[in-house]
Length: 446
Image 1 (cartoon, one colour):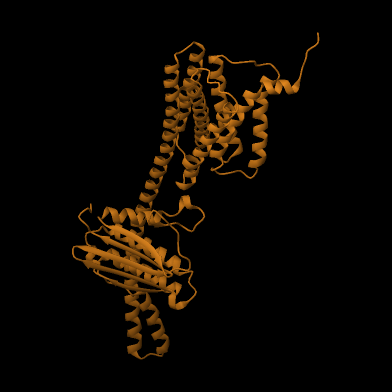
Image 2 (tube, helix red, strand yellow; image 1 turned 45 degrees about the horizontal axis):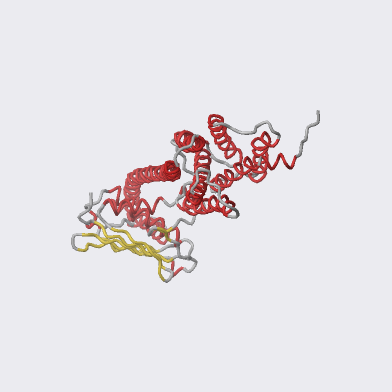
């Protein structure tokens, strides 16, 4: 018995399988590419795509699979979604929850494109089959999914970087997997089955309108889940930072008081030795007294918390060769808690010291801090030279550290503290000088 086996003909018959594999891979890879890569990600991607083509196109090209009914389609496409989750895990350095997001969101984008393409064809042809004359059929078949991919890139993929969602994980993605399987895949298959059962044209159009709306809702829900998780993680990190600042305030206050007591005793001992006239080099004693005075230089503003942080940062500036100039009325901050004062001024001065440390000109290695009462409110300002003007986003300077996921919480912490105390915060840079201005103590303070 002679079997006419034409590889090219068989491959052409498997065109629908190739199209599905390619149109699914593009949006999933577009999303997954925003996530951390492995060292050999390109090699893994080639291997995974080759195996995917072999597994999806091979059975159709060899005639093992000639078509799928509704139940078989549901099982196959659900399994294919699970396969894509495994592929993303294999190719990229992601967690299972991140892989679920990439696979389900990419799969939904593909369904959105194919569903809109079918809807457009049905509306333009006024037939349930949705067949258009060439070249309009080809334009719709490839143009609509391409347009959806481009829109998905700008509205979803780029926002992953813009809103720092690449390292966000949420177990709710497992629920979204089930939603995509039963709502997106299942509903699409049901609509296709109704076409064969002779559903009315108007009913088919309505069903086809519902399908893309479901796809958009699922994409929006997945993005919002990650965004809400990121905001929750940042809130937790900020609260941990505030708690750590409060602990540091307590320790710093105790340490400074202990140092002052000890230095006070040492200074009296030095005076006692000098008065006795024993054989001690008075110049040496003067030098010792001078050094002790550095540690005994307590800043007194009328607010214990502000005194503590300014004394601590004055010592740090002295060691760095930085001049810290303060004009502060600490009593204007009496409405704030000590931990808020310590955190707000500590973060502001830490950022100023870090920026000033990079300045080479000694005359520009200065930080100026002012705290004054303005009516019933308190005005705070910090100014320092900066070697390079920072970039801003949402009114806050972007961190210059590479790991942006784990840095930049200090400025957000300051923003939270100012808002909690009924104030406004403004930061900017002008003529090589960075400035921070805050007005605190409004009627909205809690």
